[in-house]
Every structure is written in C-alpha cells, then in structure tokens.
Length: 206
Image (cartoon, rainbow, N blue to C red):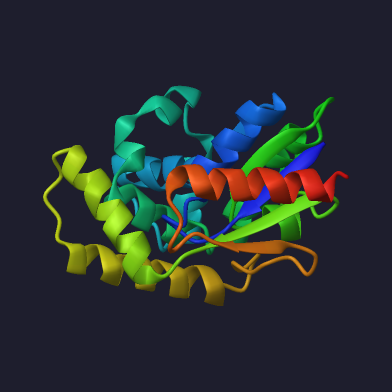
C-alpha cells in the first residue's frame, strides 16, 4: 500500500501525508527534508548549492541533521530547491527514498516526484495544489509563530521562484503523474483537506 503525495511548497502536502500515514497506520517520509538537509549541509560546509560537486558532497550528511529545526526555515527550503536541480544529487537520494517506499506493508511519501519517479507504481497518487496567495499566507503564519522576521511579500516571491525552479528543472520536474488526482486546498481548512485526501485514497484502493 504505497501512497504518493506530491505538490509545491506550502500546499498542505506534508500535513496531509502525515495524516494519511496515521489514518492508514503506515510509515511516513518527508522526502523534501532530505533535500533540505543537503542544502543545509552545503551551507554548513561553506559550499555553493548551485555547484553540482558541492551539492553531491553534501549528500553524505549525518542522520542527526534531519533533526535540525533550521531545516524548516525558508532559507533551507530555498537551498533545497537549488540543490535538487542537480541530477547527481537526485540519484544519490533516489535509493534511500525507493527503499522506504517499497518496504513491506507500504508507506506514505510526500515530495515533488514521488508519483512520477520514486514510486510510479503507487496505487494512490495525490497532487496537492493551492494558490500562491493561500500558500504564502500559511507559511507567513508559520514563520510568525516561530518568531522569524519575514514579510508576506518576501514569502510569496520565494514561493514563485521555487515553483519555477522545481517545474523547469530537467531532472524530475514538479508535475502531476498522469494518473494522479489533484486536490486544491486553497479554500480548505486543515480538517477538510485531510478528510478529502482520505476519501480519495479510500477510492483508489476500493
């Protein structure tokens, strides 16, 4: 039972994926966190995230880095988007994600290329979307709660730039799998979005 959840930043895919994992009693992997860790490691190493060599070297980051709260920052998100354009980085992280997806009993993975690259055989594929305005507002509230100083306009501009990089990269661009079901969460609250996602997965496995 593999459930693939894809979509752009702040669309709600992470929240939905965690809820699906809890509902169906499956392990969950936020694959974006792996790329954020690579980006963060590049920064810690004093490297250049746009340099393929620096980014590949950072793929050997220690597992402890995945617990670093800085990975959830806008800066780390931007770095993740930049290192993810390198084919060598994507290949280095592919095996780790694939092993998680194919474990006995199944799993829930969220990211940008789960349904198209990591687990194209997944019976349930969701592509979560939301307007830039809705996503920026959500991320702004998250940043405020964390005490981070950033404006709504800065977040919106960052989201648009990240979307462009993710969609235009040559390797595994952000797109919905041909058999994925799109769920727009722009006007949905958290509980309503989760309920809609559960219903779609139930239908996929019916």
